[in-house]
Image (tube, rainbow, N blue to C red; front, side, top):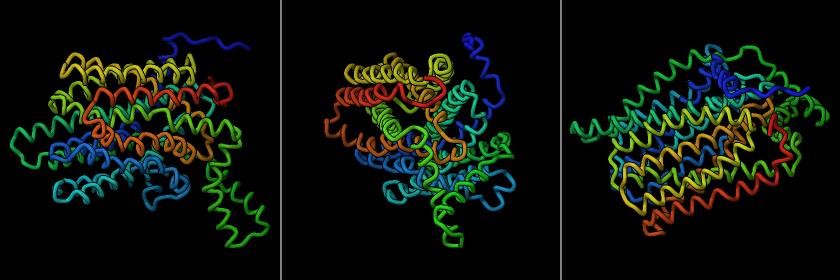
Length: 457
């Protein structure tokens, strides 16, 4: 039977599903912490007089996102006392992490960066750990909103998750930057510390909104996990406290990995992991230093908020939704090739901006182009790894794939500031190098494109 291809209008109607609104909120909750440890922290340190290298190396706290899969099995299995019973397994974990972020913001509001840099970065690390842990369960809850056989709805859900993430990040950035500028103009000496208190209110509001996201009550996830434990116990040859514990630990940690390689085969699984690691390295190098570049070239916090955050958010929302439709119609792999090529080209616009000097028009064009390509790339990427996961290990497998993708973006990109310093502040050459960084991932994807087991190529 040949399936009739949907029209663009019919594809867009998928977004009317109430589940998409819930996924939008989950994405916002996931994106907002990046405002704190990316834009706000970087600009705070810049305005306190710290060097580009210091700001770049401070970004090593993002490295925890690359390793959150290590504790993802705990998120899949361990229940939080009181919170799980009252809110559900996934929502209980989210609220716990939100509380940790809120308390960290309160601590930040009392810190002087130049006098307590180590403490400031340590608290930033706590925020990063809480955010990375939160992402595990947010992604799991988002995937579990959609049935396993709803490929088109999964692509639409991926688009809404991306829109939500950028909404939390972009609009959260607008709030942070304008609030900081407002307090600065009012003569508040510690204007960033005061800003973090306002951002804490945003965290509280997000937790209230989370209560409207339904969590499926009935699930066979735990039953299937126990089946895996029993299978391992059988291999051990006996049943006692020790073997039961070994089976539990082995099933918790090893089950998701074995399932992934068994489904795809070793060669293709390794190829998938290689592509996932490499895909967004160039974008990460650019993104880590972008706000420092904007400041050095002469843009104010207000201009950065309008062009990079406000205008960028509108662009991201529109083209993420269109990217979701493209992924539904053309397939995720073709969409990733398309977005990867554009991602490399648009990085060159920032090189042009660096060479020509401050220009609001060129700044707007570069930001719009970058957000368009990032929107297409992220939708395809999220849909791609969402379709690969086994529902028995939703949190763990998604976290493993997502964190491998994050590894390249966080650990390697932490040297971005040092690279700019090594280039003696030659931003143009820096942006050309970020363009070249995109190519290896596309080569990797080309070799495995015909053997990846997902709903649609």
